Image (cartoon, rainbow, N blue to C red; front, side, top):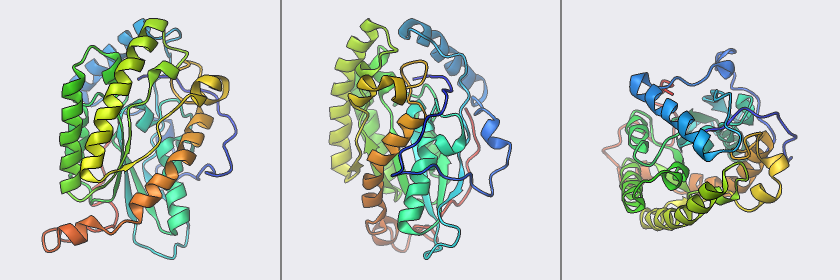
Length: 303
């Protein structure tokens, strides 16, 4: 779901705002993600047009900070970098964050690095407007990275669009299986409920709420089958405290909203990160140099 760049609010102390990755280009945080060629631009245009139908206050600014880079302590006790991959839609990409350190991925990467005392290489492949079908391209690009920890947040757009949810559920299960077989430790955030977003028009909230709950159940079952770690989705607090947790569009989180969501998700990521390395235990002799280390090949931004 698309959204604007809101004003920043104070972040909770449990997950402090990280500093920008030192090896990232200084101007990168101000550049919007590219749309991935003509097809990507067409999808983005369609998402913007559809948002005018669904939302009371459609966004004017769709730019998203680029948060890719290395996070964690400057002198870690364990110098093996862990890859953290963000897959999904605008929530995983953090539409609504004004600076890279305010994004969900950056907060999770920094929190992981500090608690594990090791470097974390963040790669954000999530894209605004992505559906479950669009996740296929992200998963294909994940094959170019050395396996680590993958967070999946998708389904909100499936719930709001006239798409068959059974097909979305089956597609999600297939993609989880692909990631699992290639050695990724998986953390799944079930489809968020758009019924909690006051910025959506009433018919969209009613339609989206019913469908999102069904899709969330399908996703949770698929996650359980592959042993993925579940993480909490957004809840009623985003409706009850919309003035501080949501941006001006009333749909996407504000920087403070992403901070609180990161705080709730971090225990799930720590559980997944502390599991035995599946690449070494399940794929011994075939994984080559792929272990819990970092990125084999940086992914280019596409949209």
